[in-house]
Length: 384
Image 1: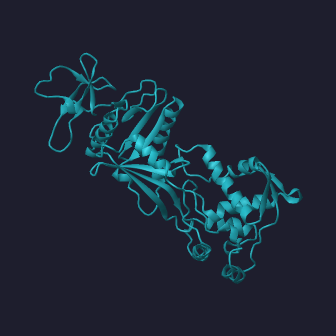
Image 2 (image 1 turned 135 degrees about the vertical axis):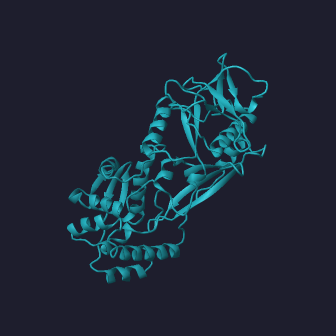
Image 3 (image 1 turned 90 degrees about the vertical axis):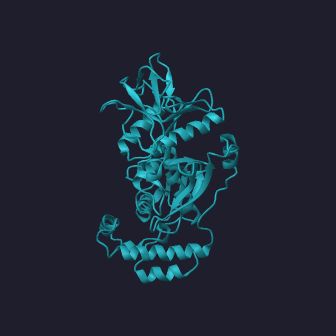
């Protein structure tokens, strides 16, 4: 920990203490047990309990990365004149965010710098406690969570969303003293390979203030990773090949889905093109793209002679499936928007048409193929 309480109940900061001059009692702000200052050659100055403690707020053996990161962020905020408390204890929540800042007078912001493993249950509990008590919360990830070619289930826990950055993650590199915002995160259905853009914040750059960052982020333009018809056709063939290979791997995630198709007298390779056209798959959807789209098409086709349905009925049906990863920072509205987005895609294909706000007319049924050869002939033609 970087903050302790003295005998007069004042907060003292580890890096500001002169151990030769400092005398008197110091205790942990959480459990009120005695602590002492540790000032070595490897780790930065910090406080530690005298003996093994059951303190649930301050863990022993904090990593150098975690201690350094908290201090870096604290200095960066305070240098800009942003009110900031380090390791502020919140008695009502019985939680202690790494930092607590105020970007305006009304809403405090809790910042958690996560360097070690945390269970989904604990992360969700902490996040929900903040949100229910009126705090905004930002999770910033350390080296352990560094992005690679694919997103892990745990990385997805920390996904955030806004209209400018789309899906994004925050990272702090304590060595280079930089924050990285990986934004517009998407993955392709076939192999879940990750695509993203990155924005860097140099914490040592005095002109790199929060206000300047906000202005720069507002100028970021949205973009698609699949633009031309040629790229779409290439991806479509690759998606078909991926499905064909999946038939030969009994451990494939699609095995259970194949059984569902067989029961409906369909086959993985007979699915309509619209079910695996290359669209950018949302990083919050865990079900295979062709599978959840099949459920959409199946539900629409069962509307019968009415040929009408509403967005609310559609969402109610789709939310019964285990479609989404656990993403505590992303609300239900964003999840529902991902499902509505596919309806607009079907509208561009002439399958359905929105005749009023939230009301859809079915124009035609999607055609299942009788054989793979029939489908391959269709794939060789331009996407209509």
